[in-house]
Image (cartoon, rainbow, N blue to C red; front, side, top):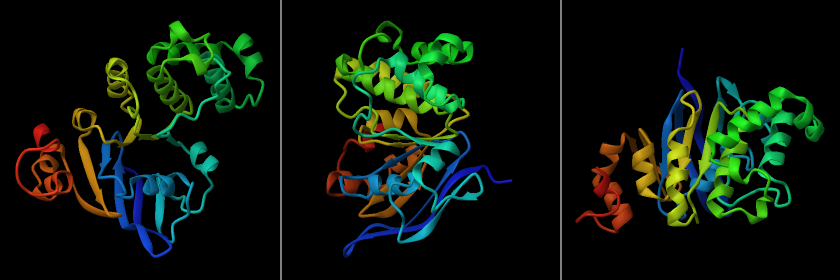
Length: 258
């Protein structure tokens, strides 16, 4: 039996005359720590939008745990365990971290919109909230409105929300984007400690995070897969160096991590 949990098969997406993803194929294996990297405009966000159902491909197929989900809407993919964080925060500013997580967990457990009741009466919801708040270093700020949280805490909350959805596949879209240097360390450590049974596809420009986290990488350039391999192979690939440096010579951000 294959250990592939998510696969993109020959995905093609065209905007006008431009191929944003040009027959892209990608396999995410059980327990993966897989990074998708490439320069701006490479088609990374388009690919993630296709995988999550924000966009429908012009052609190609997406398979999640053996099921064709190419035409499934976003919310049904989430229900099947395919969950994404966003490059830009998508949070409820007036809710606290505790209320936000209680709402998500209640919906996940079939309690609908009665999360404020569940928080008081359901030991299961309360326990899961406490567990996530501690895991994501949010206990001290759990009663503060999200809008007043430090940006790093907001990013942590967003990943906590994703994990509250009980994902089997988690797509992390630039989790450290915009996070100040002083708040990054906790975020990086928390990402590194995510559960092994969750298969993760990371989209990221920060090469320190990519090379410390990923055990497999796919390089996307101009909507096309340039190459794929383990971190050492990618770090020493002259084509990858050329993409990041503009030429094939010298040392750069990719090769420094080889």
